[in-house]
Length: 425
Image 1 (cartoon, one colour):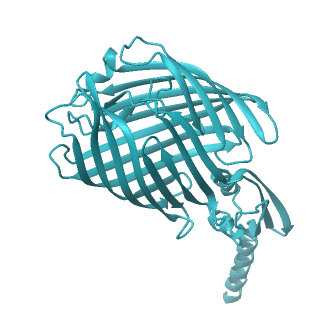
Image 2 (cartoon, rainbow, N blue to C red):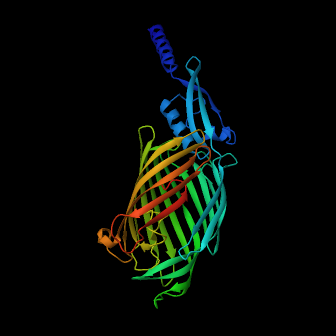
Image 3 (cartoon, rainbow, N blue to C red):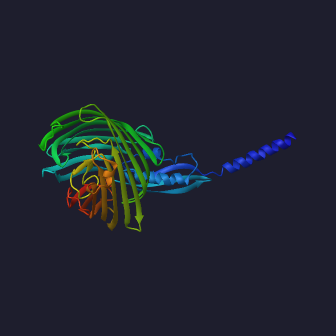
């Protein structure tokens, strides 16, 4: 009887071993095409690892992960059989040029010539680190230094450190009139980055900043001083759900980004306040050359009646053609949608045409929720544009759009050109 049990156990063990030995294992992970980017770094952030069970879904996710990196313009893979149930996974990447200058020229609201010069490396040390800064002159001197390392501590944990000294002439609105102030923001920001999983990540931290306002011209109000000097602390949380897939200039999928901030301050003109907004982005490739893109932004802040309201109505932020810092509010609903069509596509450059419609509505400082449906707060612009895209340089998209007003709103411009680097969203 004991011999029978021993034989049965031996057979069971041999059958189990044979069954489990059928699992496909990864013998090695190979990455070809990386020049500046460190191969060891790329292997470390991949889910596919040597000695693990081969999972085709994880390999597909790794390809998308590689294409999301600023350093990589495209990626693909092969699975090669090497020996019994062991496989070599070969990733092939195409690298971007990631050291890029930032050059912008424009005129301010008072016709002052302005320029911005910067230099950024989006793959510093070959480890997916963004490092750089800019200098800006718009009649006043501004500068910033930025450091972002998503994988500084591990494949899942990173850090952001920013310093900025920003100056600009900005309008503050009092009822139906406005005054121009010199605005100065000096800030130091530290954030932690954590990738929860393939699609979800968070940023959290704090920003210590000083805000200064100095009256320049326009109407005055006895309740608002001609100069302010405010010390503040900002607590920040950013949650991102990212299910986008990239193929050069084409994007497909859905992405959601929630920004939540709480500002601590002690002064007679602003109380502690919160602000949050959520961007919902949807992209769909249409046939071979088309790309539909949409962004819905919904935001609210503490609803105080103050000229310092945080949500701005501006060409470069939300509505193309509306003008520069046209108005401010304590709530915002903005929908941007556009169709991008590739008309020229060669090895290193792509040209796209663009048709768009931008819709937005604001809540007045101290106003009510129904401000969003009041005609004077609703702004609709539509237009067309061009995109000149380098397929070899990260974020090297020069865009020009012309937006014109569709609805009747006497407070806004009838239309105008908007220039920029990178897609509008």
